[in-house]
Image (cartoon, rainbow, N blue to C red; front, side, top):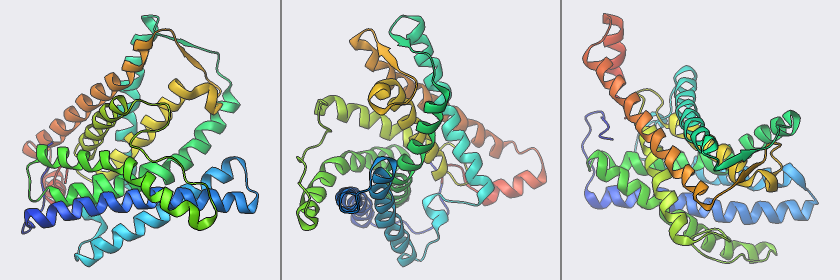
Length: 317
């Protein structure tokens, strides 16, 4: 996770850390306030179903992404500094992130199924298709796009010029771990202002052990950084693809019945939950291979045209 950057003057340690924490604060505030405001708005308008879940998701993106872009513009940088890119490069990076993560999940969950740890129901194609569409849109707006823009985008890009890749990865992940708890504080502060009931504050969702949740979040955060540094062009989209795929797979495997995914999976042993961090580790290894191949391509370019393109786009920027 070393990452390469254009040659620019590195900010001071204080400035780099302050910017990274600002990215986390933007995400936490947007998540907490956007969820509270969106839920209250849906209730006031009598909106239910997917539309009720879409309102807070859209608000989270609306509150977070423009603010980060404004911060970037204030630093006289372009969105490419965060890891965005053109349509073609973005689509390739997105598919890389999604493909590596899906392949890792299929490999590990397939092995778990062969070992009798998981039992799968018959697929209901229409219900599954509806879930994939609705979940994809909501997860993109509520989590994948805003979290990657603020964290693996702004926080990572702020830390990387000052610190090594490993330290920047750990720092970005540490900020990531702060977001859930701080977001509950923002939600609790916002809900009474719009007539809502404040939800309990905490660092983990209800029903989950905080230690287990934070361990999984740490592994997930490092996997997202690995995805962010795996490709040279529009690398943030690789992290977004990874994030979306992770959420989709986990909601089918762990919450299929509750979320009506059309494909229920029964865990036959408590150890089955370990399959999730296991496939994240496999995905991280896959992204390391992608990064190594991209760096090898820079060292041994295939043509003059390739050399020119690769000089313009550092790997894992």
